[in-house]
Length: 223
Image (cartoon, rainbow, N blue to C red; front, side, top):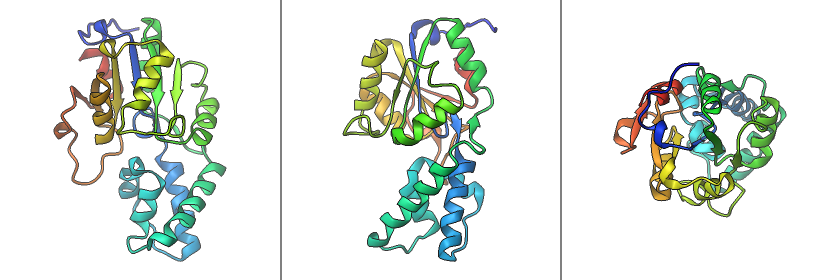
């Protein structure tokens, strides 16, 4: 194990992660499901790199990307079809980002608690975490349907702190989208922008006003 010289982590007990684009690279399976919807509709598929960057916008954002002229009444049926296709192949290619598992190992070695706060519904979140063996390792999982509110509202992060018996003053939240940083700040925890995630075109994580911006998971150890 590497030694922790991080002034940040020396003051932190709990590390909370966003899921898609931060902890796990779920884009290959999500874009595969989107491509199946496009095939059904006889529509051109968006390029993978572009679709990847829209994963943080959820199923609605992906459908709007592939079908920019879609009417509101047509949106929900396609969204449901995307989710159904995705649920059939949740972990075909999904895996932790490079450096995530060594980071988690290090946190556990140093007796730091870690958990997950995501807008992804629990029906999709839990099977993925179980398949990858992560559900039994984290202290909490708060999904998009755990509460009535989701990020950027701070409620889910605050709920994770309650479940993990953590305090805002000694916790950090890591995410790859502006709503993650907004939620973290509103919850009173330190915010970290993950630059390896699904950054949408025209966005710059350096302008999200996060407390810290990192280019790789293990960079958290040296902040």
